[in-house]
Image (cartoon, rainbow, N blue to C red):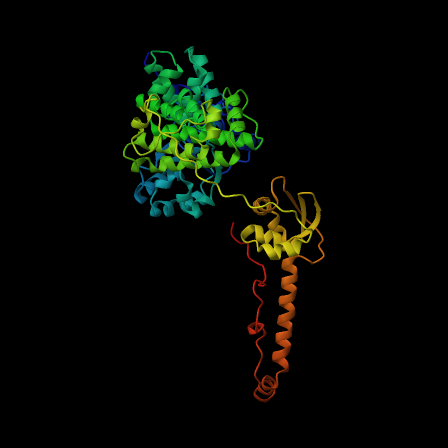
Amino acid sequence: MTYQVLARKWRPKAFDQLVGQPHVVTALVNALDTGRLHHAYLFTGTRGVGKTTLARILAKSINCETGITSRPCGKCRACTEIDAGRFVDLLEVDAATNTKVDEMRELLDTAQYMPVSGRFKVYIIDEVHMLSRHAFNSMLKTLEEPPEHVKFILATTDPQRLPVTVLSRCLQFNLKSLSPPALAGHLKHVLEAEAIPFEEPALAMLAKAAAGSVRDSLSLTDQSIAYGSGRITAPQVAEMLGAVGADLVWPLLERVAAGDGPGALEASERIAERGLSCDQALQDMGSILHRVAVAQMGGAPEAGDPEAPRVRALAEALDAGRVQVFYQIALLGRRDLPLAPDEFAGLDMAVMRMLSFAGAGTAAAAHVAGEPTAAARPSGGGAAATVRSVSSAAPPVPAAAPVPVPDAPAVRAFEGDWPAFVEVEALTGMAGLLARHAELASHDGNHFQLVLPEASRMYAERLYQDKLKAELLARFGPGVRVSVRVGETSGASVAAVRNSDAQRRLESATQSIETDPFVRELVDGMGAQVVSSSIKPATEPQGEATDTGRGKP
């Protein structure tokens, strides 16, 4: 008997066999059970998620000899002929090869004739977005008011290219791409039924490579069965796909997190030695970093995830800021790979960028890696291979003479007058904005408790507090704490006083202009008008401009 590929053998023949589309199946089943059938359906979604399969099942449901049902028998002549692709009242058209208006008119001319053997004449038009504009126009009237015995089922991967006039005439269902765990579960079910031995990590790799497509996942499974001589193993699948594999990516990221420069470059070199895809390596690093970021935000790992402990460990080893930086470096590294001398150099440079933010070569990184803090990191002037081959037996370099460190500024005590402190210190940027708009609610030791009016709520953000805390640390020494709340104020903040003074001077200037004899003569005698918005005080004291901007860090 001729071998039938898995994608065809396991093509669903009933609604309950369809994988990963419960929202569509539920709507269609309810419509069939209640007899509320639409005359035109549009199924959208990426390749291999079940658009034409769903169309054929729907055609069976409305033509089954047992009656219109959501559970076609699969045994009557209509069901078997539809499954075999020879049902005379089911017309499947590939719009990619029948794009012209004449072909569409010829097809629609047959719609007026009654079905030969079925209850309905069903037109399935695949990749309908490929039709020409004139072909769409020719089908609009028939699509809007078809004969009672005609049903249209359209399928497309690109619904944005369909005219609005077509979309408005159809009942639209969007089929989702399947998640890797859902695809892996489906593959497991298929392989167990086929009695083919497999390793679950291999299924996870196949599901990820399929990018949400059931058909692609089954085709890749067929390929891996042939590649592994009837057995599916993780190493063979990784080799077939050119995948990097968790055994290489995880050590690389863990070395980067520890600031272990030589170890990270060695892990990168192992990827190069196997001739694996550097783009895939960076993509996998980005995927892991995304999971780490989710874990840092309190997200729960997927059930049964074998890598969950490593994700948690990496989430604890890295702060959130560095995870975001590493993720961005991985994305930009993929973008820059075509511009690199070769893709392995591009991967090396992306890893070294991460190391520069991880603190590789510093005393802290050496402590994490278990190395003496005096060990110096090789300079980046040579090629990556040269950096890796530096001998640990190189002659010692004489220590440089110590550079004199200037004395730290003297630490002083806060005297309790917040406005006077702000005026004297003339703080700038974000620290200055928060200091000028806030009032000192209380001061206990080195704990500054500030309060902001509701109109200045924006300055309560963490970044403003951190900038002000840094300024206070420089002046009052370690142990300074800053807390900010929004509430009622007395209007005694530096900004409020400045704004009040500015308003008073503006009112005084306006009154002076309006009472000026010459101005009064122009207004009364010549009908002139005073433009209030153009009036400004004659002088504005230094540094007393109103504070309205957000400032710079």
